Each structure stands twice: as structure tokens, then as C-alpha cells.
Image (cartoon, rainbow, N blue to C red):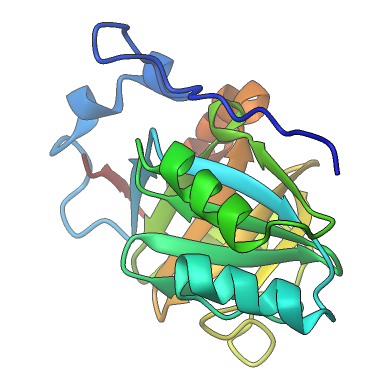
Length: 210
């Protein structure tokens, strides 16, 4: 078995960090949207994002993940969560783990210890993406403008998560509540999606939360 070197990739507190949407200056927009806006946007920035690969059919792998995280491996097109930690199915042998910012290094070490000797891969992708939360009574209408994927509640219940085409690009849509959805977006497309969401939500009103 090869030796794996695991490094702390998060800079120290003395290093300025900028989220993928720092250029939008979202904090300055808090409280300036339409009252009773139909869509509320919040960026969950600086979270820890880890991709995990292994055999979902291997009980030892599933057991190791549960030992390290306290989460069962989610089945296809679903996401499971406990507190501020979530684990999402990305493919037959791949999952996305999101943890509170600053905990990704310790969580990765726990996973490697629990899965020692198994054929796995864990990659820290925190710097390459961010999570946007959309909530409100008109979020589904905004999604219907943006993607051809069927977001009707009968097809997209709470707990479902899919990667799909969105505004001529690609991202992951996760439904976390009756009127709450999350968009997992890549850093390089963050400006494009921010502009798109402003336009798509204009008729319903868009408010920003810190």
C-alpha cells in the first residue's frame, strides 16, 4: 500500500480569504431587496468540500464512512445531512462531503483512519466551488426558468440532489426543504450564475441574507 501524505490546505487566519462571490459584495446588499421578496439568496462560503471515492457495495467501506462521519452512504440522487455536515451521492463510486469550514483536514484524517487499507480516494476541492442557498415561495419558478430538469415536488422531493444543465452550464441542485434549495457551483462560473439568478428572480424580488 502506498504512503499517503495529507496536507492542511486551509491558509492561516492571517491570510485573507475570498469566496467565489466576493466580487458581488453580497454583505452590502443585505436588507436592500424588495420587501416580501419571493427569493432569498445566501452564500454558504468557506465550507470544507471533500470528494470521496470507494466501493459503495463494500460493507467495509460503508461501515468505515459511518464510523468516521456518523452518516450512512446516500443512495443514488440523494443527500443526507447531520447538523452542518452533508454527504451527497455523485455517482456509483463517488460522494461529496461538505463540512464546516476549518474541519476538512481533521475529517479527512478521520476518514483515512477509518478506511485504512481500502482502495479509496479523498480530494479536498474546497477552493473550487461554493454553495448557494435559495429559499422562498418562488424559488421553483426560478429553477424552472434555468433548467430543463423536472423540479416538480413529485419528481424532486426534499433530500434529492442532481447534477444537471443550468443556464447553459452545469451545476448540482439539492433540495433541502419545502421552499429551500441549494446550488453547488464552480468558482469559475460564479459571476455568470450570480448575474443569471438576479435576472431570473427579478420579477419575484430577490433579497440577500448574510
